[in-house]
Image (cartoon, rainbow, N blue to C red; front, top):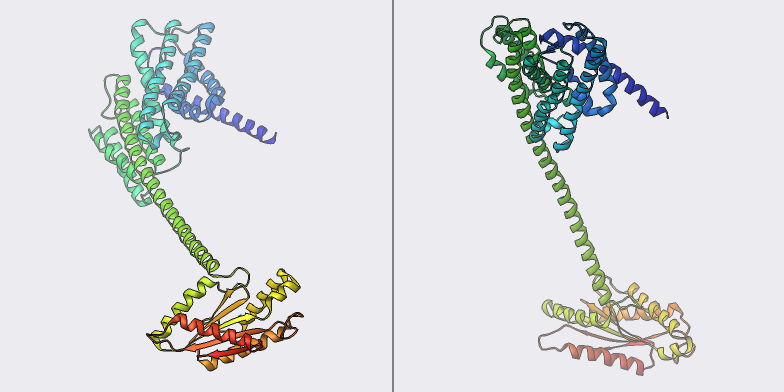
Length: 504
């Protein structure tokens, strides 16, 4: 509710400001009244109504209506012959309608045919603005001049010239003075490059040229174009457009007072010629500015695209790197799973076979000893029968963990050989060292004191170990090496279990 009240007050102030500005603009325009019916050669109110209606729509009609009614009363009162009250009200009403329809229709054309909300940043939209600026005033010219004809403020013979003058007065006001007010609300794409010193110098040159043209009537009007083009390249769009409006206002004022090279036999002809010239200057700068803006927007868009592309490439690279790491980790995990016994978490038989071949080959190359321990849990079938398979699984896990605590993690390989049998590969390990490890394993297993009341050895879990050690030679057989360890294990069982036997 509070926001609506605030917006309502803002709208009242806006319409009040438009009404005041409209009245002042009418008074200035009537200084350039050159034809019967108080038809002005320059209609400054049109420069105000187009930007206001374009941005605010019909919300500002009340300001235009009030300004038009109040502002036109002095002009209509001074018509010769004087108008009757009814004709005065009729003509004022027609003018009010014309002054509202003109900017509304221009706004309609811009919204319908312009593909961009910011008109002066794209060439196609600037061309639509130019067309709308010349087409929309045809409505007000037709209504206004026809109204003057109806109330006998001009004759049928004066109609064509009055129509053209009215039309161009509004159209050129759109072209010359409306752009700065519209551009002011647009996003700036051409940032000001000129320094204050550069601006002062060029404005000074511009003033000198204007004095030469309009005070001394030297035909140097073509020198205005380089200054205005400088403004397009070096100033931002709003200031560049203001520069054109400033030149046009100075030129119109000077010519209206009879100064300069555009002065002809009649003030109307002088102003029409001048406005045509300044309109061409304005159109040139507007089109050039739009081309530069389009180029800047394209470059900025390309820059943002490249930056976004770099970010996306970085993100995709990071994602790819992470995916590769995840894949590598997954492969490592899968490989580990494929090589690991799921229950005891030591190597499985497949990995054992491959690893033993690799170590056999390595020891053959470097001529170092290789030891192999084949281990069997004594009376394990009876253990399972007595305590159940879950407890048997727990026993296997405890035994495997004990092996890990005794062996070297980096080089030795512990594997579940099958059922309750385990194997330990000991690279670079001689017979004495292998015997030491076997003794330690037996000792640590006994320390566990795992109950085994049906064992024929002790009432705790014990192990039998077969050991073989060899320094591989070219003619040696890996199968014979394994057979020796297996035979040693068999002998350990035959000799009463809970011991190790070495065969070389």
